[in-house]
Image (cartoon, rainbow, N blue to C red; front, top):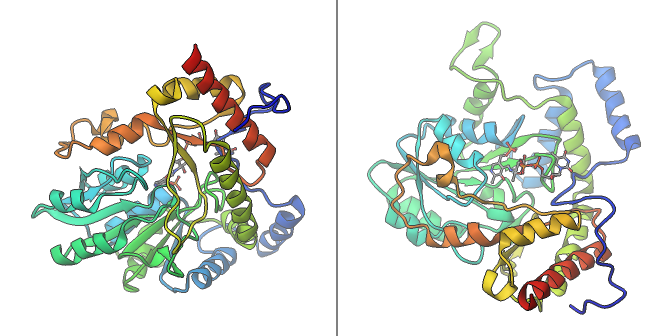
Length: 386
Ligand code: T4K
């Protein structure tokens, strides 16, 4: 990129965050609030939650859907409801909630390395990590990049273990015209405010075996079968009516939001194409309908002229607040340091040390993206030339 005189390198007047939630107009939201007020029904499988579930079922072409108050509890309940135990092979390069969901089910995480371009689990490393105690593979579609499903499925079938996806970042992603939600035995989606599709907070499970639905429903509502029967020790993980209202409205606007992100992604790819030492996460192949959930780059300190951490700090001075998703690696957090790790996690360690996720959200202007790219380029020049 040409850092011309016209490109302002003054700090932004207001902070530019890594993401901003989509907020519908107050008029649109108020219309839905009126319905909630009329119903006088706020939670416990209310009419808006039921309607939202039907909308999502239609969107994904399946009836096997359960909604939750957040993605973490959705995943926790999904693992519990499927009766998984022993060891589960998973990625160290994820938000810590993926591993927490295993821990809360007393399942031992077995970390396997990731692939260098899409950052998803490397099937070869998964195969090498299988033991007689393995009950499942838990892969993450990192930043909305599909995991190598066919290879993971092959491993899962050969070893007769479950294949679970943390699809927190992958709402709406399609592969060969089919929703990614149909991969594997179970997928969890997060509807947290920071996600491109959100319901304030929220989570969803989509599963292959319709029989699991009843168990998931019991588990999210204290195990109640009816007023007088509790059939299992469930928890409280119910979505409420406000969440469902927001989710239904965001779903109406989903396509516009993705189009804005596609343009932003393109502007970054153009703006950073010639910046040395900046490697963008590869776009998935053309059979994938990608949703531009994150804008991840790797920073090569030697080529770029400064470390990833210095760039992260320097950008703050321009009022640009990037994030280091996902650093540190999960096994390096204090609460997981005692988990034995056999795989050297070479790629995951390199990526965690160099990754930076740049701002991407629907209201970010292309001109702002160009300014961020110019800032990054000028920092690289300063770093290289002293
Ligand atoms: N699996 C994976 C792979 C995940 O990434 C996540 C969640 C989960 C499972 C669990 O799903 P949930 O239980 O959350 O449904 C955020 C989110 O809280 C978390 O949902 C997300 N992943 C994770 C990657 O990011 P933080 O601590 O980085 O968020 P925070 O509060 O620093 O927000 C980031 C930026 O977003 C802020 O700097 C400003 C902006 N922001 C944030 C909020 C909440 C806003 O502008 N408005 C807002 O309301 O964890």
